[in-house]
Length: 250
Ligand code: GDP
Ligand code: MN
Ligand code: MN
Ligand code: MN
Image (cartoon, rainbow, N blue to C red; front, top):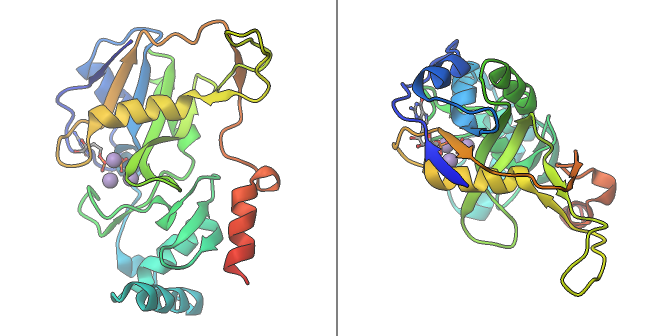
């Protein structure tokens, strides 16, 4: 398997046809997985915004005040308002704002970025990243697309790439029913391939001014395994999320 960044992509602006730009910059093969940083998907979809677009309501002012208490830093209530408007559930208000976005991804600040923001104060995540992936895919000769974002994960330091949207592949590779080297049947392992590809692509893309938001994964083979459509956990079986809920409302 090989990964490489697509060279010479311009600064992406609202209305840009990402698929056309990628197509012109690289010779794709059918089985390539094209991993696209959400930042440029958002820019192309005009998701850049200003703090002034989000006049703060009472809840946002309360959250900003609580955040400021915890961190000792002034927090802009308009930013809290932007996060609330992008979210369907607030899991934690402080010491950081952890929410579920409208498309099911749980992350800090609803994934709203304050770096590489296309001139605005803020860059919101794409509204429906899997639909974005499907649109990009339909304009490419490759048939697998993953939209990535850089995210912290609980229990570990640092950030990494995760998949927030996908098209043309299932996120999970299902090993259940297969056997380990001692002949024991695997009964729980569904490998999240979309996240693994996103992490690898993110490693190549970098986080700063490198200008390499699109990474091609070539010769990744799924192998003879089942598929799983599951990616974001449903609340009913997300025990960590349930525990956070109980703890934060005590
Ligand atoms: P995120 O992980 O989706 O939040 O994206 P990042 O802000 O970490 O950016 C990932 C990569 O894309 C970095 O190499 C950035 O320099 C690059 N990048 C961001 N915006 C643009 C753009 O408009 N054009 C190009 N060519 N590269 C960009
Ligand atoms: Mn960013
Ligand atoms: Mn981001
Ligand atoms: Mn990043």
